[in-house]
Image (cartoon, rainbow, N blue to C red):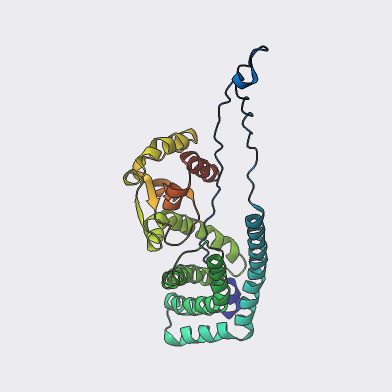
Length: 301
């Protein structure tokens, strides 16, 4: 079991991105009749207003642009560092023989392989999560500093714990399958494990909107919050060839955690649904929401 411990690394990342498209206003130009040549200066008509400038790009004020650029640089460096640190954390768990210690505890507690996986994997995942905790705290602090996250620390801690518990449970199932396949087929275990993991992953995607997402956010039918959006969203889904009925269009409370806006599709098959964040309804125009949703819908498999 130690030989393959390095294969079990579990990461849970919750992120939301938005695309905000500015909506230029069309200002009709008013034609002005030039005054007669003989007219007195006092009776001259006012000059015609300049034609409306066509908006072709969205720009930020210099101070806000500098702030956004700084945040983008920090985020890029943070993601790069996090990737290498995750590898270091896995190496450290193996180097210090923590993985072997967890294995010995699991084997001493029970002789059943299934139960051993549910002892070993949570311990491994917890050790990995604790090593990553400082980075998670820095990331949340960064978002708070820039005013992006408005979530309280108790709420953030609750979400972090729920995510880790889900990681431990789902990871334990995958770990048990992995080690079982390795023991039965030492040479072709990678192919058999990949084949088995596909239907399990599809099952998780199917259940996510029903079981997992409600653990982290509050949902309500979109018809009770913004019924005027439903016909327009239906047109987009129908033109995409995958219509979603109104009863599977939902509003999600996001303003208690972030100022981000988002509109997306989640689930698969009978659980596929449209989700519109409440921040989108309060901050975006109807055209902006439809543009955001259309972008996400275009990338939905």
